Image (cartoon, rainbow, N blue to C red):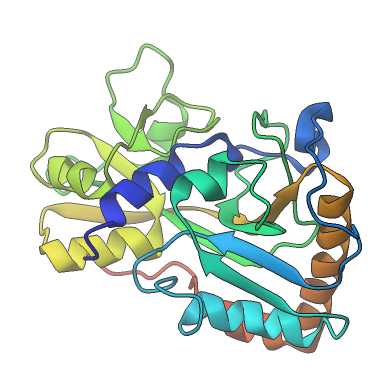
Length: 261
């Protein structure tokens, strides 16, 4: 595992951008326009490093996906760089960021505390898996019906899940605690969790499909963000209509894989 991954994963999933609804984007917040002219056709994005799917800006599943979208945007160039988590998710005045990723939309109606707008078109769907201990397997229905007084300790990204959770601080440590039976469950994206389970050879964890969520890009809440969102969303739709987007996205996130450690 890359030495930066635990800190990266904590920061990635510890932000409000995971609980957005398209209808509530920006909450009336506007940020300054740093790109002039606002309709500059070349777009530069910023992203964080993720194991296996986003380890550099040139090769691998996510760079290939962005390149496919660029093929359906003949007006200009779409590229991105890897930057520190703080600049990707917290620095809303980052002059280098026409778009940012990755993030996802949990459900409509969730409050969005981040001053960003989200792509009108999703890239695909990311599978979240409920990881529990083999000695005490907990079904999805028990988790979603838990009330605020439950002693059922599920660690997950801090978000409006509709049931009580505790924030993951470090995904590797959460999975190790689960493997040892110290917590009841972990709810996380399939590819990253599975990567760590296999690497760490955690044998006491049980996997079960939880839900699939829209995988989206996000943009600043200003005229530049509006322009970039419209242009990239149209390119995403064109790529999807051609069949090229689905093929490329399959290399990033796959449907639920039914296996057990």
